[in-house]
Length: 193
Image (cartoon, one colour):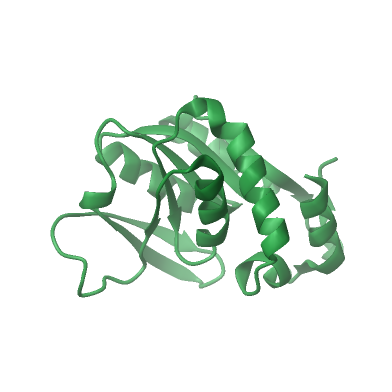
């Protein structure tokens, strides 16, 4: 997706240790026009999957998931990191390491928002190690729903996230990335053509 690639190259920062700062478009400030285009492109790529619901993580996954949900006209559910007092009843709970926070995060979704038999599309901002995505996929399976696919705005392919998903039993799940960063060595950000 050319518009996204230009935004990454134009304002993305390589902070070292595999951390890509794209706060100008996604993780702090949101570029509404770009987000609309991201949602439309994700919807185009997954329209044939008969998606019933989208699952993402708070906070940075919400904007691309919502844009995709608007384009597909399906509800969006996000995994919470802290349990609010309004979340009662059974929950799907998983943990995943956070590269940017430097520790484990707990992810939870109320069982009332993931239903057996549904086609659930997982959307997130990044695919890096794959462990956060894997946690969301396990939630979908726990709900006895079907994973329709995984869509990410930016994949850091050098962190082997796809291999993690494949080796964890999700080999046949379609994974779509709108931009793929192949290297972040020497302070550079190298995108796949």
